[in-house]
Image 1 (cartoon, rainbow, N blue to C red):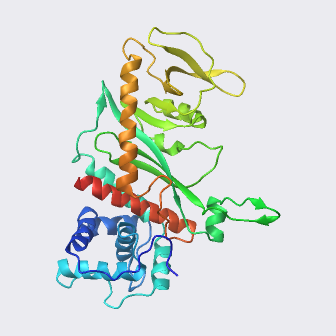
Image 2: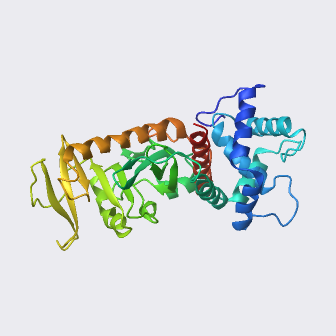
Length: 358
C-alpha cells in the first residue's frame, strides 16, 4: 500500500532529475559528508553495501523526490551518479531492499544530517548574498511549521495525535505532527539555524529557545507568533539582539508611557508581577507589534510596520521552496522519531541547496 503522497510511477530517464542529484553532490561533496560522518562517530567499522556516505545522499534524494518510493529513489540515485561519474558511483549495483535501507538510515541517525547542515551554512556564509539590514542591524526572520508523520506507536508517543472520544469510541482524526522552527536571513532567505522534531502543543511557544543562541547585538529578529512566544523574549535579549514580533493576540502587558505615533512603552513581567524586560508595543489592527526598539523618534511606528511585512515574504519562501508546508499535504516517510528528525534535516538541506542555486 503506498504511503500518503507517493506516486507509483516508473523512474523516467529525465535529465533534469539527474542534474538535480548532481547538484546535491556538488553542494555537499563527498569529503564534507565523510567529515561530518566521522565527527558524529558514524564511520563504518566494516565494509558495508550501504556505507554512511551513500545513506546521506539517499536521505537527501528521498527528500528531493519525496513522492517516489525507496526503490525508485535508489534507482534514480544510482543511475544519476553512474551517469556523471562514469561508473564510479557509491551506490551498490544491486538495489538494496527497503528493509536494508531502513536499517541503514537507523544506523546513520539524525546527527550527521544536522552536522552537515551546520557545516554547509558555515561554509556558504561568506559566499552568499548580503542579508537585508535595518540601520545597523542584520535582519533575521524566525518561523515555524508543522509536518505530518506516519501514525505509528513511536511517533504517536513522541509527537502525539488528536484522539477525540465519540460515543465511547476513540477516533483518531489526525496524524501525529512534528514541528520545525527556523531562523533565516531576510533577503537571501537562507536558513541559518533550526530546531527539528519538536512536539506540537497548545501551551509551549511555537518558536524554539535554541534558535536564539549565538545571536549578537547586531541582529534584529522578526517573527509572527503567539502570545506564549513572548516568554522567549528574555532569551533573545540575553544575546544582546533586538526583536520585532507580530503577536496574534493582545500581549498581557501593563500600559505605561504613550507616544505620538500610537505606540506605548510596557514591560514583560514574571509570575510575581515583576517586570524584567522593557518593550514597546505598536497597535496594528487586531495585531500588536512588540519590539525592543524603544526610541519612537529613531524608529517611528510606520517604519517598523513596514519592516514587519518582510517576514511574510520569508514565510512564503519557507513553505513553497522548502516543501515543509504549513498545514500542507506532505507526510514524511519515517516511522520512528529519529528518522523523522533525520528526514526533516534532509528537507532543510534540500532547501539550502535550492536557495544557494537561486
